[in-house]
Length: 363
Image 1 (cartoon, rainbow, N blue to C red):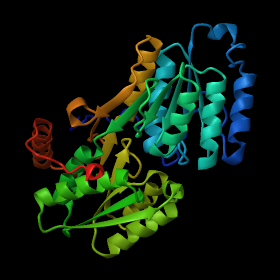
Image 2 (image 1 turned 30 degrees about the horizontal axis):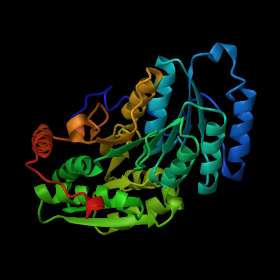
Image 3 (image 1 turned 135 degrees about the horizontal axis):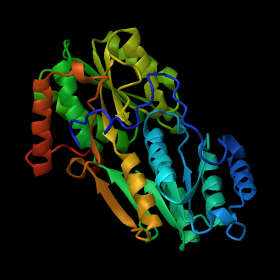
Image 4 (image 1 turned 90 degrees about the vertical axis):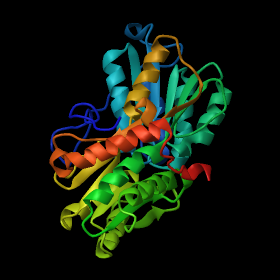
């Protein structure tokens, strides 16, 4: 993906506001233990059970998406998936409903509510849904599922995984070149191998251009709450800034927004993740490491509509534009052209196998 002009990797860019709230296309925002009741009532009220679909929905593919606890307004991971399904709802004949569980115990009831009503395609956002999707997919083998950031060995599940380490290496190079102090930071969400993949790729990119640099690494927590704690994210970011970090990369979902606040407050730079977050704190967001979850989700909905759904493992990296970094009107002036050229050269070398970026999940 590499250098993306405004309107490409920046396709998710809303107006310059810190209160982006996408409109809801379907069911209610479901929170906590009430998720199953809320989604079930909304589906039944809409006439979405297999035997009670509205006449105007005849022939349409019914799609249900269950977000992780960070919610679809996290401006990051969930927001990227939301963008993809929203776009699909505009372009394809589908009926779309969404659920924001609010806590982990509500994920399975929400997914089952869709399956029990015969939804054609169900999308689970995040690795934490792997066990739920696997069980529900086994119970409903004729229905089809998409698992984002999870690998499930069932023919009716498409497992979408990304080479985050490759994109993180490139933004690490940008951070290494931009840092005046020689100290950069990484604020991760949950302390798990998936986020270690971001951290390791970032570190290798930083050291590739500045071998003397220091990379500070901290994680918000060890459970699901780590994705939804901006206060803790800011606390960690401030601590890194106090230790000399002048560029911070955050891979922490909603918690990462605290690092954005810290960067603005202390006049430092932050690197966004998953979605193009360059717009969030203009002038302080150096770039964003984008995972094109939006494009991939859109693609799979389109394939399901066309009757071409394909289960199995699908891998997305630099070679197929699954990851990259964002350059647009919000940050173009922050990155010298020579640095972009250097990063683009590295991108080609990674694709060609000349640069091997460590995958921390395979160690």
